[in-house]
Image (cartoon, rainbow, N blue to C red; front, side, top):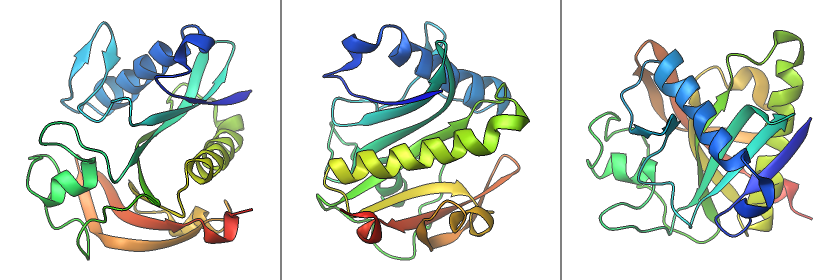
Length: 195
């Protein structure tokens, strides 16, 4: 099992992995969760999949088992910045604008994690390991990108596994319900993970 952080600058070094990540996102979000999201060529994507972002994949033998997208909170593409901020600004009709307790940050040392998934096809016997690899690579990549904090929307049961993953995480907003799934904005402090 491997973890890879992909970017527009390095995707050519990894064969079909970048496309396979977007295919796995489609399977997870559109097919399994039945979310209405953009798709093309069997891949899910959105306006935040730009050269500013990075994508983390946990994979084995070409199959993507899990993934995360990291986007700087300083990103800008047309009217869009990053998902949490754009929701707060009322630009996204699928996420409530009151998702954060405070104003969405815009700072070089804060990145957003989004499109977090573990494939439904990932066997239960290895899911905990896959999740741990995903979080470890997210922290490593975010630190290498200069982040000291990551914000994201994740399942609201995060307090049960945050400490197990060694994450210094706090709630950053109220619990939200998306199509039967309870989620919550969190802030992950990476200062203790800095070298």
